[in-house]
Amino acid sequence: MKIFTEKEAEDFLEKEQFNVIERIYIEKENELKDAIKKISFPLVMKISGQEIIHKNKLGGVVKNIKDYTAVLNVFNKFKKIEHVQGIIIQKQIKGKEFLLGVKKTLEFGHVIAFGAGGIHTEKLKDVAFRVYPFNKKETRKMIREVNSSKDLDEKSLRIVEKNILKLCRLTKKYPRIKELDINPLIQGRIVDARIVWV
Image (cartoon, rainbow, N blue to C red; front, side):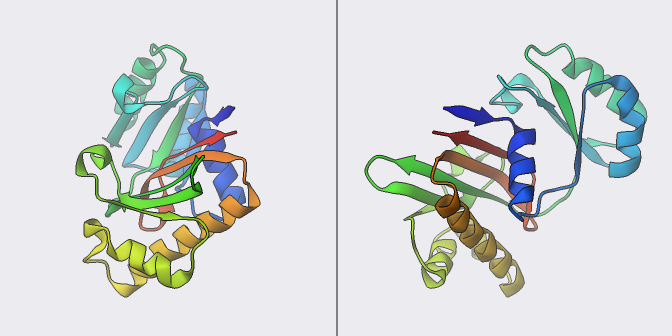
């Protein structure tokens, strides 16, 4: 079993033609200023490391950072967290947050998940599942089962649909994917991802 860090997962998904949020991975303080010029405020900073799975639980995600002093403070705080190898500086965007996922099961093979995303995913339990493979019509039905997607306009629905179908193709191409979590997907862009391989 191999676990991809967020950086590895997002780089992999980007290569597979998914739309991933603008981000820069850094390890040293002297890389901060260049990173900020490319990303621009407001931004998000996150810890990254091979042994880090739940960033939020470690206090390893800070949003809405608006100036260099705050960046420096967060950088120094993050560097004290155990197992941190690097830091991701990311563009901050707003919008409805969705979850996309894949889980390989003994019973059904690959199961695709779509639902309400963000930090309250587990509490909300607003998620629909389908056993892969399934078609475009079934994808639309799956989206409609999720309460959080009820008020989406047609353009937003198509973006979500496109991402689910892309995830299906990815699962076919890489059957060794054991778990894949995209959470959140905002405005069709991947903001955070994790992949576990068999």
